[in-house]
Length: 501
Image (cartoon, rainbow, N blue to C red; front, side):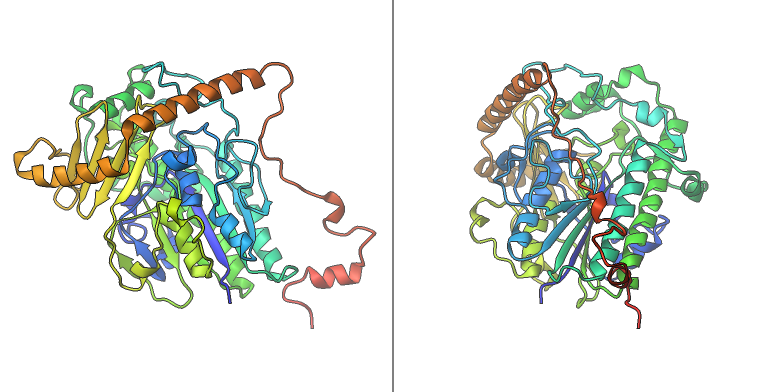
């Protein structure tokens, strides 16, 4: 029998905080209980350290260079199959509550039902422009105000959104329990926290008053001591306009940790609904990318350093005991893994899929293929690519010197071994793998063409009447609660779970 599947996706959650499930000092009891019975992938990476590209890759199993979702304003084409398409085609009911940052007129991408709108715009307005290197677009680029403005609030744009996501998800779990639809189901619950701004409710903020982790392990570097891409990130984030103090850093990190606890409560509410109704499901927990959290002086994402690129990934299987798996894996692997667990073949599209099923690793197998990452959005002037292979991480960009890090001996990536004579064998081997996978010139040309097209289309569509693609959740008021085309006795019996005797 095909298993039900419950997916929790969070936004910008640093995977180094999940060395084997949540770190001991995090107040996250629900996630810790989930971790204890999960397959815990300790070295999992995003396909791209930015929301829309990372999420399109997560859903499709394809890198941004295949999907064309290079940045937060690039269209996700309707002809790219996602796990929602594969499962729905096989007879699943598929539902999304929350964020997926779809750009373009298709706001479903295989989901049969979507319970909320998105938190970010669906149009081309956030398109970067490689023709203007160094240009900073004030109205949508990150700036350091998220850090200097960190603190306590009882509501915010993001808290309002995630409260709604959890409410609708919990209601959907109850609805699924009532069994009006006999098909197996896949419910994706996607939150926007702990993404900045770093603002948290007092009850969660107070949990971290005595936290010993409010300062980064690697202090801020001088601007000139950063690699060229990190310097571009500083420039894009308008760092010169802000004076970041230790107090700002501590408050931002404290709010971030507090919002992990907030998410833990929300996830707990949905799991409680699942368990109290006696339903069983595969449960997957993942983030789209990480957050540097002040390490090296960097914040947010947009780079391949561990804080930005590494993400938590846990899969709780009803018939498996929990275990930790050290092999490097990717969010690209989620789509083929879900299909594998559900018994759904992907043969027709596998030649164009960059991920591979995690089921063999769960069964004790090994993985030989490197994990690939790409980045071609704001703060870049040309595409960047990365391979994680065993203990090594190799980063390449046409504009920058190569980077090679030994994550086993240098987990904070402070020593670039690319220029070191003793490591030229490893460097050349990984460079060959990278060159075989990527033609950076062709990749750059494709990004530039996409950006130019989108700038023309966006400017045209903002003239005259404006018809945005933002998703409008469907709610048929005449089919909710009790209406006069219904039998009250039947309705109340069917809506009760468990049914009365």
